[in-house]
Each structure stands twice: as structure tokens, then as C-alpha cells.
Image 1: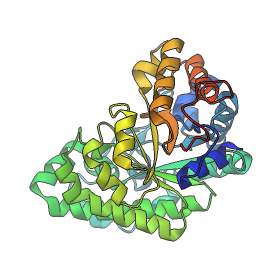
Image 2: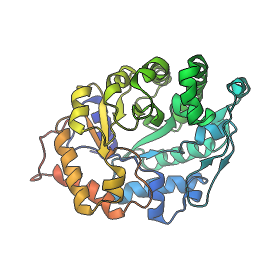
Image 3: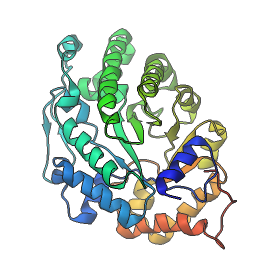
Image 4: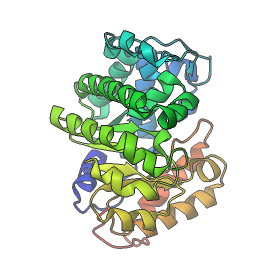
Length: 351
């Protein structure tokens, strides 16, 4: 069974031989191949090669590509600085005045900024390993795009003082995501993940999420499905327990579960309606933990996942400088736990 087949089966709720491994790591792989982040984020062939070689070296079942949180704002004309060895940095908020929204409506984000670079990188990864590996592409969701256009603090104030204005910005941002997704679909990527860190209950209240954002998520997911995306996921950081039901209601196929939510709690809330992905701590365990700690925590998540529709991963992005031996220990432990004679929680595994 290939990694792609394994993940597709999990997404469909069908049994697999072991949990698939699709970690949230993209730029974090660059250093393992002596590639600076400056090159990773500016050369499509370099981004693609890092992802392909990372997949092969660490024996993942799939890979996730991302342009970073500034990608959509840059594609709409925002100034972005690229440090030699760090992620791109946004230097301008295009909507310092919400009245400027009309000026952005005529811009076509898929042809500007680094978006063509990203499409080319995803396309190359799909062409080289897409028959065997699941390729997951990432775009930002409406609230995160709005935060990059308006500024996080101003968006928060607007959500309280000018919800109607926020609604207009979110509608525009969802349209931006939809236009980018339409082009990205042509790369042949197998799934699309919407990153929405700013929707976290650690950031805005669940009530505010329901009042201002949820409907935009539901409509956007519906459009993505209608245009042909076979798999759509949603990533919200932190303790998503209060909004799990809302996230499922959008029509997504899977959701990410951060390490702040115990795996068994997330499984109980999801009730097998969607697949789940998570949820090792990317910092204290994968980045700074020992190999033994990685193995112990990986086994714990495998035990909690049991027969659930679960994809083994980190709870959020794995940072640069994460030791190669920790990544290897993570993957090896998943494989060993479900090998004949291992400590499998049950076979066949419905992960």
C-alpha cells in the first residue's frame, strides 16, 4: 500500500494497515538539505526538491507544501521582505483603511507575488512523487488573509466595533482563496488545507467565530468541493474543543488537532465524521525533546488514536532546526508500533 493510498483510505473512513504519517513540515525540511530559507521561498525547483527529498529520506506517507502566511497579501500587492535565512516578512498592510478594499478587487492574486512559484513547486512535487505520496497544498483561510491585509490588532478591533466591515473583508478574502484554489487544482495536488490560526479559541471567542467567520468557511468549503477538490482540510491552532462541531459543519474532510487537545478527546468529539491529523507538540517534543521522548509521545498518540480516522503528525508546524533523529524516531515509531509483533492497538487499523 502506498502512502497516498493509505491517506486516501483514512479520509474515506476505510481500514488501513497502520496510521499514515503526514507531518506539518515544509520550510522546516530545508536545513536538512543545506538549503537556506531564502532560497526555499524564492525558487520553485528548490522548494520542490526539498519536499521530495524530505519525503524520501524520512519515509513520510505524504507531504505538505506552504508558501507561508504572507503569500496571499503579497500576491495582492503588499510589500514583503525576504531575509536570507528566515520566512518572508510582511512589511505593509494593504487595508490600513478598509475603504481601500475596492482597489484590491480588480487584482488577480494567482498571477502575482510568489503564487506562480508556489504553483510550480506543487506541480513538480505531484509529477515526481504524486503516484506514491499524498500531496497536500496549503492556502490561508479568510480570517488569516484578512489579518494579513488589515493587521491582526485592527481586525480584532473591527470584529468588535465594525463587524459589517469585517464581513466585507472576509467575503473578499474567501474569494481570493477560491481563485487561488482554482489554479492550484490544476497542479494535481490531492488535497487542500486552509490555514486559519487566527480562528483559534485562544485568539477569538467561539461566539465570535460563529457569528463572523463560520459562514464564510462553509461557503468556501462548498465552492472548493464544487470546483473539484477531493479533499479539503482546516487547520486551527490551539484548543479547538469549543468549535470542533462548528468546524465539522463546514463540510471539511479532515481537521488538524493541536497538541493542546488530547487525541482521545478530539476523537470523541469528531465521532468518526471526519478524519483527524495530529498531534505531537512540535516544539517541546519534536524540536527540543530527546529521541526517547519523541518515541514515548508517538506511542501515546498511537494508543489514543486506536481505531479512529487518524493521520499521524505534529499538532502544528514543525520548526526549522528540528533534529533529523527526532523526525526519524517519530516515523520509525509509528511503523514499528503497527508491524507484526509490535504493540498495535488493533488491526486492521481504521485511522
